[in-house]
Image 1 (cartoon, rainbow, N blue to C red):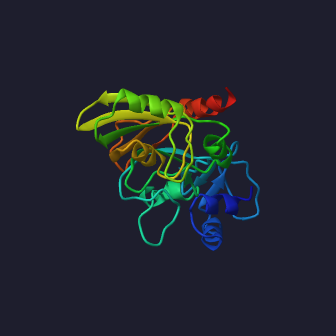
Image 2: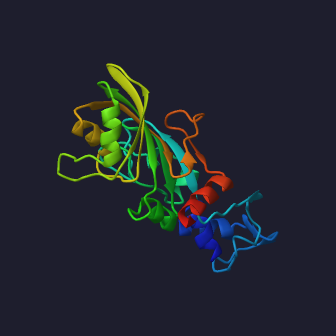
Image 3: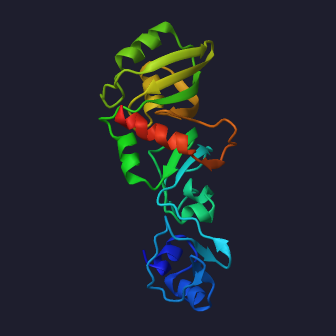
Length: 239
């Protein structure tokens, strides 16, 4: 990879600005000053520094966000704030995108990455990747609802969902539940409860495949996945 392209891709300026940095002698490769923007480097092997600071190159970035309500699961939107807007510029330069969508008012686990292949596998209907949600329901959730969800329910447009695993955590006028589904239809959790005459008043995704929401993350906070978490996601696809 050309040194000017590497630095530009990592957000250190436009190609023109990067060429100035090179011309000024601010860039070193393996401790040798490099001024020619066409010099080829291997970012995985060569030591690149800018003004004495080591440049870390990553092909892919994997972020876990605890998505807050009111923020869109999109890369850009002219009308509202997106999850990408919540990222630091040092992470935005990798041009990541959310893997799937959470409704605007839904909280919880959102994977953000620029690894298109992994994202495709996680979202593919053929992979049946389970997603688990915690929800507060307006109405008493009963064993009959568990049975109905276990068979699959018919949504308002006639679509019959695949079986979902419903667990009652607290039942009453307002019920706390966990629901695991393997699909991602539009507003699916809300529509599944509407199909049995109930309404979701709070919704939070707590897991996706083998990835669990880090409960230490405040709403709107995010962190990089550990190497182990990335490998778990990849291994999950192999099984």
